[in-house]
Amino acid sequence: MRLLLGFIMVFALPAQVFAADWTPLRGAEIAVALDGRGLDYDGANQRFFASGRTLYNAGEDSWGYWRVNGDKYCSQWPPGQVWDCYRLERSLDGLSLRFLDPEGRPFVGKYVE
Image 1 (cartoon, one colour):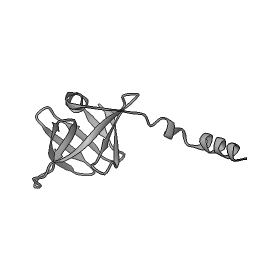
Image 2 (cartoon, rainbow, N blue to C red):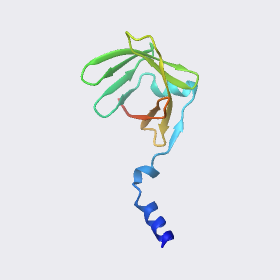
Image 3 (cartoon, helix red, strand yellow):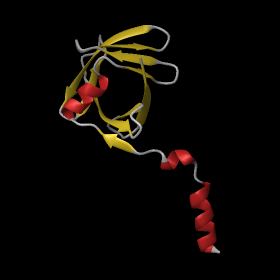
Image 4 (spheres, one colour):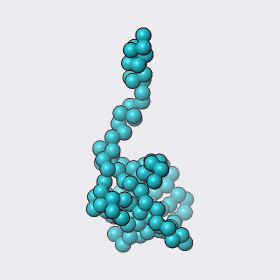
């Protein structure tokens, strides 16, 4: 009975659990993944410019800065002086990026052109 219950629980999991494979991006891969690209975050969007500027819009424009620091994506939003850094992963299909904050919370954006 216990085996049957375990079997049912595994197959009852949503397909999204199995499709959640991500590839970590490192250094220059992060710049290539973001430079000149745009992402949609379900109600907000962001563009990353080669100049190091980034434009985030969730109803109104907010300009900030972005850079790669080691193997992390970092951003700064004036008037703040602090750079917040995230690990970055790409979905296996190459259509989405996942930002992981220092606590490991994910923020997913889909590429838009």
